[in-house]
Image (cartoon, rainbow, N blue to C red):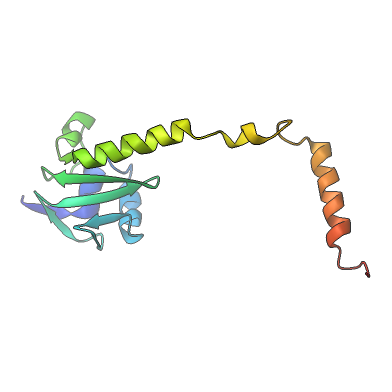
Length: 134
């Protein structure tokens, strides 16, 4: 076998848990072949360069093998190699996420309580009420 559908290959290479998730990702443009979007039925071959977006992080991989059957993870990892630039970009993104401030730390007293939320809602209701005449 020298080629297979992109959605089957993504599923077999364990980028997506189900084939329908792989198909949806291809339809949404989260998978590109040579920087161009494609349909799930597109045939891929050994040597093709794919860019796969998962959780807003791009993975650039070179297809090393073809399989239509999902196997164990070590076998699936032999179907592709990730480019060094892609590995470096992912590491930088992970480091940036690790060093970015936690949004919850910006709150002075933590999350608002139920009473605080009610008070906020009451102030919004009186402020934005359409029935009040100015």
